[in-house]
Image 1: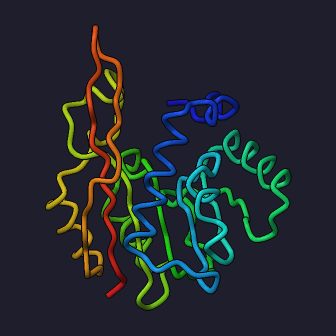
Image 2 (image 1 turned 90 degrees about the horizontal axis):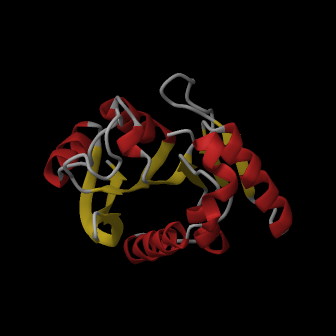
Image 3 (image 1 turned 120 degrees about the horizontal axis):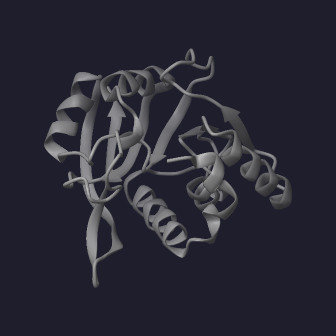
Length: 203
């Protein structure tokens, strides 16, 4: 998927807006948010999830590897008049870890694009302060029809397998909830794809 090309139209999709709002609500249900907390959104795209949460958090770093997404994000931040949202070009598969540490890290539909899941979970653990929270919203395991032919990422995740990977990376208090149901047209109808929210604490 070419995220740079899709960036300008990204926020025009009502499903993406609805999904971000649903994930934000699920995070609120599991994590006590506060302006005292610093946060990192990894794979932020145009920042839909952070814009749904920013009034309840302190400084937020919004990281993505797509220059096109970050360009749209910078325009949105400037238009919003907020002063605690900071965009960052970051790809943890190749870049060193940032020096800053965070109380909360969250991602939305990002993990299934990352080839080395175990490495990035370890990176998230390293980037969190003691007792920090990690929130991952992504697809349940599916048959490959969500993205279709040619997609080289993960076809979602089995929850128990991801729980084990989180535990091996050093996380505890791991909980899963279904937070959204995506519907995608297929043939003459539509197919549903559950989106989970996994919340874990740095042990």
